[in-house]
Each structure stands twice: as structure tokens, then as C-alpha cells.
Length: 257
Image (cartoon, rainbow, N blue to C red; front, side):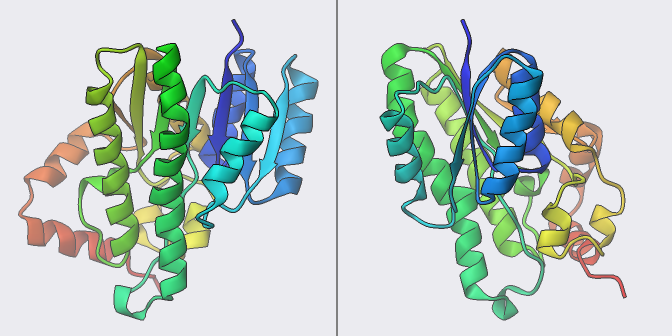
């Protein structure tokens, strides 16, 4: 049976690649992002290439009403969501006390509140049907604090923690929750966050590879999947003294002249 996936942040990067992968497999899509034009271009591309339906919902997820509005629109259209992919997110570089508070508040709304709210809205339906899959895009950044990206790293720690907790709450059901933890990835994230001129984003993974790793992990019900960085490297970082690790991260995130 054809599965319908709702994907946030679908206009570019990992979200766009997730949409393409799902379309390749013959699944219908509900795509969400701020840019209606980009979503309509994606709809045209995927509907012409595959025999699927793509529903476009332009929405700014930094608005606290966005998740409820998305849910209400999905219900009004009579659509059933089988896969929920909370992919939207963004970061921002700089000292916390100097950064624009409104930008950090928007970041927390997109990275945490919208993801949590959408999950809360759709999960009861999954439980009632005893079927469904959730893929939450976190980050390897969530595995440690991030000086010069303090809020972003903290939001991703939340995403991983929240996702893992739900996966255990639901382990006696047919519903799975997967956290995708990419390393630095070649998307619009780096330029948007001001990280494109840092050592951390000098060597980046590709969004198509990250998306495929996440999608396959979601299908198999894996709890966490790391993509774009070696798990061995993650383990080595975990063995470093914490202050040394954090100073290293801070240096990697300093903007090069």
C-alpha cells in the first residue's frame, strides 16, 4: 500500500532529498517549508517523474501556531500520514550573549517546539492504528555542548533525547522513532548559520547520502543513525577531557578571516 510522508524543511538540503527518496519508492508526499515557490518546483519535479501526489503546505515553523495549522490542513484534505519526518531546523554562530535573541527564539521554535508539537498531534493517530514511523533530524552536534553555537547544539540534544525516549515508550507497538544524526553536511545550513567560513564545515557530507541513511534507518526502525562522520571519531571525541573537547569545538567554529 502506498505510504504518505509528511516532511518539514522539504524545500532544500536533506529534506528535499528525503522527499525524492520517498517519491522514488512510490510514496505520496506532504511537503512543508517557508518557500512556496521551491515546494511547487519540487511538486512539479516529483509528480512528473513518478506516479505520486505531492501536497504543498507553505508554513513558517518559527510561528508557534504552525504545527496546529499544518495538522488542521492535513485533516481538512482528508490525508493520512504514515511517515512523519521532522527535518526542518537551522543554527546560528556567535557568542550567546551577543546574538539576536529573536533569532535564537525562532531557532528553538523550529528545532524543538514545531517538531514536538507535530509529533504530539500525529502520534495519537499512529498509536490508534498501531502503525507509523517518525524520523527526527537531529545532529551529531547534539552529542556534546557547542561553544559559539550554544543554542543550536542544545536543541539537537533535545531532539535526540526526545526521540530516544519515545522509541522506548513505543517499543511494544508497531511504531518506530528514529533520530538521524548527521555530521557537517553540504546544505544551505552552513551559509544560513554563518558556519560556512569555519573549519567545522571545511569537509562536508552530501545531503543525498545523509537522507538515504536516515530513510533506510527509519524503515528498519533503528533508534539512532549517524551519517557523514565516523562512529569511531565520535567515540574518540567522547574519550577526550570535556574542557579540551569544548575548546576544540569552539576553535572549529570560529569564523576564518
